[in-house]
Picture 1 (cartoon, rainbow, N blue to C red):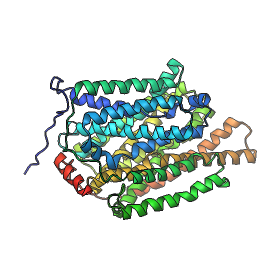
Picture 2 (spheres, rainbow, N blue to C red):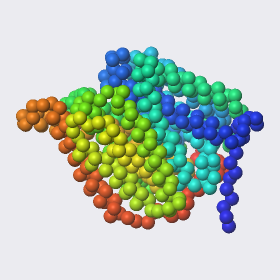
Picture 3 (tube, one colour):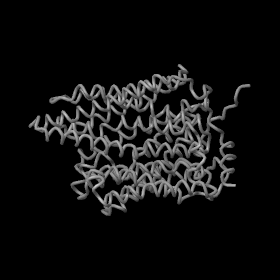
Picture 4 (cartoon, helix red, strand yellow):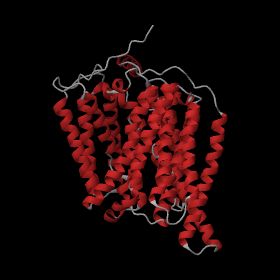
Length: 507
């Protein structure tokens, strides 16, 4: 018997709003939420001069926002059952406005970190609320194989779009604060749009906010942030030589132990201990780590090439953000095409995505030369983002195939431990340490006296090491050509099914 699909409707809109434009309004709101943030990565160089903060300080503040984006998943449907769509979107936009204003004038590092965390938290809340109401519009067949890559087009493309917008506004208006005011205006537009075009409507019956493990959320956040701090300030404190760095390192296993023990002993933990019993979860986390490792090289190696060797300014390198957007869109679209019209194996698609990531590093290895035009960086940038979009989307589908709702939302947070900030900071710290080691080794030998030539040699050697590691991993992936976990199409659960499952979690 054919499956009865839910019909798509958006009853939260006022009746006079045309039905055809309703989902497009929410799609635009989701994109605007994704553009927002507390501190923007691309403006760190501009903020260092005016705020008297170190690069590490600004990077830590931005990482707090990335962690904040990862943490709402176990709570997100509970918020949806407690508040209306209108309340969630207006409040999320209002909090983001307040955070952007505060980030321009607050000078305290701990307070800025907290503000950035809150901005990231509500950024995800607003984005999820938009996408959850148009899921049947994106995929009328309730197919996660189309829905997840479809929303990742917006999510992945928004990051380089935000960086490009921030740099363009700073160049045009001469102030890094222009991006913050611009986001305030965009969030105000979201508030006015939602307030004037929608009314309070509940998709679910009212369920109070009980059994929410807020302390567990903060403890797991602390675990992530300790790891991020260690690799962000590792070079500054000279790693193990610093007593403060050793103290944070020794506190990390204590925090992890508290999180795990607490998840076993309380009735409704933030992250259920049972989730670690899925034997395929750890390999998936390992694959996420591999993808992030290959995707993190531009933060260290490519920046050394463009800044230290080629002497490109930020007005030149911002063109690469446009190519990143093209790569993300192409990668997500290719994932949808692979899964549905072609209906091919996941393992083969992962190999295609990883091969694109590896090809990026191979091309960069052979073109580390002086006088390299910016146009020569377009293709490797496209390949990197194209492969990462494929890997990111497909691994999330793997995760969905393993774990059902609502445990899947916890699994998203667990995978975010790797994806959202931790792995990026780890790889940046390791790449930075390896690059400085190679640079110091070349200078100590006295083989080269030209500093630019020395930078090129160290950069080329680091790209070569990453290429060798990538080739080994790709060979393992090609050998591991197995049937997908489940060949059937994944169906998104109905609102009634979600309500029943979440009621069980609070009984």
